[in-house]
Image (cartoon, rainbow, N blue to C red):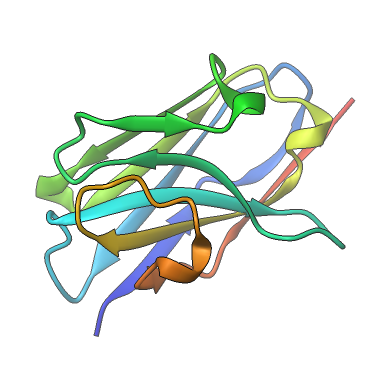
Length: 124
């Protein structure tokens, strides 16, 4: 059984940086695209960033372009999200998710595996 576990969340001041990590276990996920989603209280889960199985294609939600960087290490079955210049509106629970195949998939309903989330809180 595949499990994904996020880490690296925390409480920071605006302008700070954090790096989220997501470790997969139970199977090799090198053929999967990975995404980060986030969900704030009272809001729907929203797409943040995607990386294809080979790392050659990345996609970012407009609000995080230029501040966030997604990367992956297939040897470690892991994906990362480097978040710079954090803003209060980035406050959310962040989830990693994996989807089989190489294409960009913004629809959370299409994903095969999900982590349990890690809280990121940014204060002004």
